[in-house]
Image 1: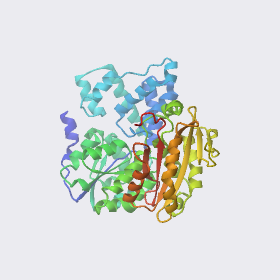
Image 2: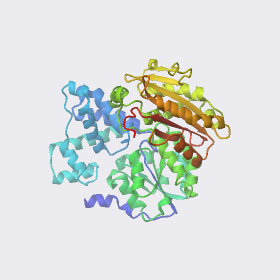
Image 3: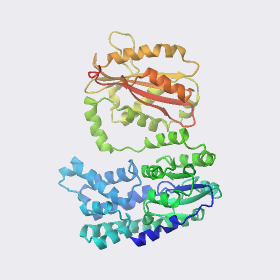
Image 4: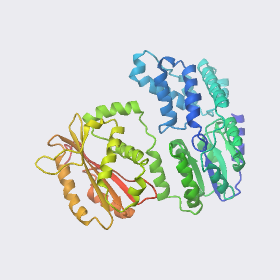
Length: 480
């Protein structure tokens, strides 16, 4: 273990030259290397070394979910590996093929041992706990590294990374904070001539990301002068563990994230205007992009949930944001003080289909019983109908709407559980309201005992429009 502590000494000995500190993750954050490493190096090697050829399709799905498309994106390779095994073990298709993924008990013990989760750490652990499973694990990890060295070349940093480094170099001490082996990090940062901007390149040999930040920055800089830039929840966790700020590079939107950091994020950071509402809004946007439940489980839950739980409005919020973010008209919609109910109604349909709801189960043609009024949308489920009401409110031009809205909500709420209506969902947009006023409005309109509420949520962080989704309980039997 002494050798491992020595590897981290450059972090411990780092002394401030500036008042500010910035840690930057590498794979998937500074460099567009996560896709090629996971798809072409990690996943094929995992299938080969762990005998997953008979279920390679499902192994690939599980590996890419864990390492790229989930809240575990960017975690160390060892816990990621056993998580892939665990996900595979649960899949009916894998069970039907009578394939039993490794239990990996010795690897799990290594992960929990406190030894650094690197090849050197594994070798040190194996010196005390020799085992054939650990030998196989080391061979797999070495083969991954060899595949990365052979495959990953010429992949440049994302646009605005170099510009951001140049901007920061005379204002902040910068280090690389990564779970990637140090050799690969040095090679990639030197290949593209950006290693000169950072004081330390810290890989897995120097410990975890949390340890990197603790050794390099904790107690040396004011907490609000420490910023971690990352693309994964583990980066956020490392920042919070050290009472540091976090700037997210959003998966799938990396270039836009770096441009925003270059144009406004760093300036807010050094001006003392980053912490609070600005950082919180970035993190809300970031967390919506990385689910906890894999897609094959979500589809199963949707099939079961449609009959028992109704539509998940948190998932609907995420799907809607993900869909409309790519619409060419979205900036106009979010920046114009006008009501666009028809636009939002149309764009809700792709979000619903992204949730696994067939388009032929969504209709704009449902008339409420004993009324001439129609729902804006209606989704037919095995349990009954989910009806949608849309409302677009604009500050200074919404008096009539606001006066009638509470009564409409009362009537809508009273319909749930009657006339085959199992759930009522309200989709409301709010333009130009202050944060305090919007919070008061939502509290008055959607009392917590009656409605489940998600929001308010921005679609574009720099635009004045926000939206909220509320659901009347699918069952009101427990109300007093």
